[in-house]
Amino acid sequence: METQYNYNNIQCEVVTKREVMKTKNRSVEQSLALAGDCDSSCPVQRTAKILDGKWTTLIVRDLIGGKKRYSELQRSLSGISPRLLAARLRLLEQHGILTRTAYPTVPPTTEYELTTLGYGLCDVIEAMARFGENLA
Image (cartoon, rainbow, N blue to C red; front, side, top):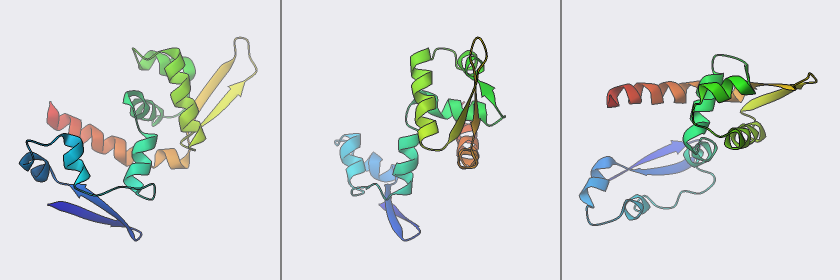
């Protein structure tokens, strides 16, 4: 059984956990394909593309509290490489999720802050936090 969602007349079909569990002999990809193709007009797919990867949601989580310098983000995200952090920040900036402000100091100082669109992800991050508490 699949669940259909309608976002501003855009159909999204989601396979329920029960349907996936019924298909033990199929791969997860085959089971999820039962829902049909999800195209670029699907709001869930557009959001997932932005939040893709382990570090992106953690960066947004850290910026919910306000402006942070690059070095503060790097310290709070233990294990992320400087190159990957820079790439994720650049991606979020390109999508309008955050703004980057560079100050002409020595050494250079760069601050990142969520935009109004970025703060719209607060509910998503909070829902992930509630879900994660249930996993513990």
